[in-house]
Length: 269
Length: 111
Image 1 (cartoon, each protein chain N blue to C red):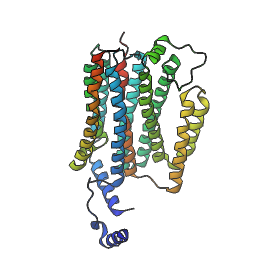
Image 2: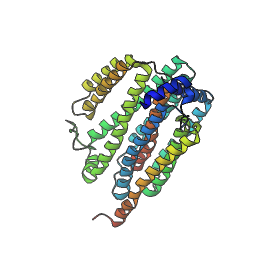
Image 3: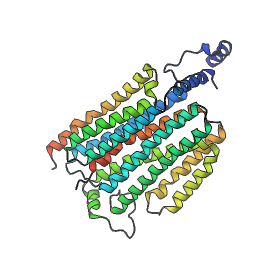
Image 4: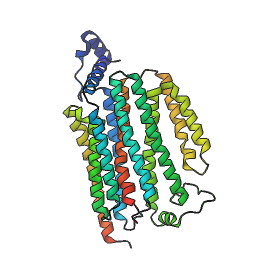
């Protein structure tokens, strides 16, 4: 009843019939901000839990050698660069430059994919060296490094918080790349996503956590297909900007994870 | 689509068109420099609480730059800035209530 009244009133009076936006912007952007605020509390809780463990454990391990720190620094550079390319994609979108928009979005996805690959490599290395969780199967034919095996035994909360925090972030980055792929390529991205899922599933060994983790891509492909077939549309500048907000948030969270998890656990020789 | 939303989207896009490209490159450069400083500090033999304070301080500066410039919060209306950021800071600050307990444990020592 009230909806009908609003529709009729709006139809006669045009846009002036509505109150001005409280936040001076469009609804989907406010919706994304609200999601990001709630998600920041999730990461906030995880980061506080990690800091609590770091402060309250006198023998906190420092397993990250210079190779790990270098790897994490390159990962950080990838994410920072991806934020720059994302902001340039938004800029191209508001100027209506579709070609540049697509190019910058693909560059952002490439940086995100680079981050995921480096992070996956780091995880695989640590797991094979013996820094692992009870739920991860052991790597066959690989002797665990006593230093890492000792960390897993004496301070089990290190591996639990490390894999929990970085795994949650890696999931967000993966979904961010999928989100940008949908915005950039729409339906064309679904077969690419399915090919990536098959490659990630079949090419990773069965003992790797990524063997099962790859199914996230299949789930994402199903959800993306449902959205794209039920509500097909050409994504405009506002959609690119909203996707950009999510991507920058993922970058922002890493700015806290990198110093807290890696730099606070650096092995100084 | 709702005409009000279309008008608002166009208004926001118009604001974006006035932002120069150079500022984003500057912010990116500053973020990379701060990251390099953080890596340098990671190799200094410092007390964990002191190191944590400095690194988190630098991370907050980086977060402010990302939110302000890359997420365009600097260019939003003041109501948007204050309501979103103050609620976020308040909620995150509330979580600090657990830290005195972490210090208590470390002073007790391991038994």
